[in-house]
Length: 218
Length: 218
Image 1: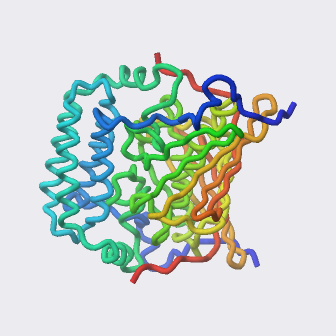
Image 2: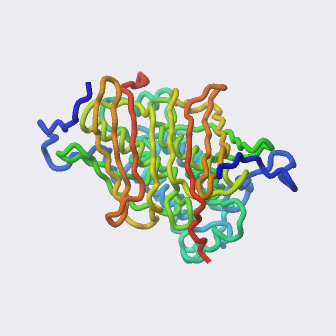
Image 3: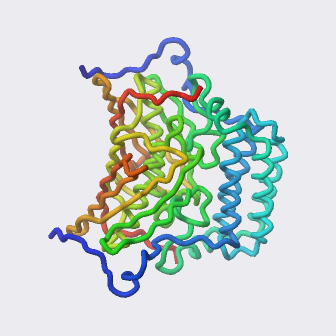
């Protein structure tokens, strides 16, 4: 049976644009990750013609990594810890405040069942000159469609994802990423989304998801 | 007209597995980027329960970013510089030795027209517990299909990309990413690829590309 999906607006969901991604703290590991994002962008901006002493930079960064590793929990322990609870994750590569790779893209849900987020991407996400890499757009959309499923109904793993690139997606401009679950048919979930810049659609996505979740480490 | 694509094996291409991605130097900005990749992984491994002094880590990383920014070229100059020549790029988010986000995935071409690369992904690329994020697989495949086009024929921008997820893609295990251009019909290029782990196909991709290239900054 295919059912139209409408969001559960009972309880807290009726409140103002609930957060579907973990808001960053401005302290602890989140602050260190925010600084690491600056390093990633600055290294790429510097490039190999920069007069900066790169050997010294490498030494300093390796020292930070060594220090963190000396204080790190065992990998198994950390895996259990990062998957504790049933709430939003803090480590994913799109919105996670603990993941330097994440732009990040904060996502919030609307009462109409859709979700939205805005992010401006810099040089680390470049594909063609001055534009976002097509695979980065795919990353943002796959994640947003998955979160849209969490927002309005059953969720699961991506089985199929089709991306259509309508025009190049600009770097250095605010991009709006949206997603919406459109149908649920047994274990099959269909979800759509897009990335717009200045009101124009750059990339659209259709996803087929199946209600399946690998077990969380315990 | 649709033409089967066979690789140009004349000249240097007939030699041993030519590199299609920039090999990292173990010095200069590449060494600093390699150290930054360690920081990204170590921060995520540490998490918010680590006893490490994260405020101190943030201060050190911000100091590195400040230092790099003080020595950085103007953005326009850097954009021209990173797109100079017609060779492989050093800044892309999949294989680029100057991009901390890149795993990296080195790619090499075979005489049969296909290209391959192997990478092992850690925690920053996680989606479901212990598995690669579906959007990261999409990123690797979009890039690999694009490079496969460069290897064997005309290349261009992604117009459509379809990904099929056959089984979860494991973290912490070597993944083989392959791509091959299958046909060229006027401006339309069709290219396929997949990601395998232990010989089993995890994700397959079909891409439609169009022979179009945004101008390089000059």
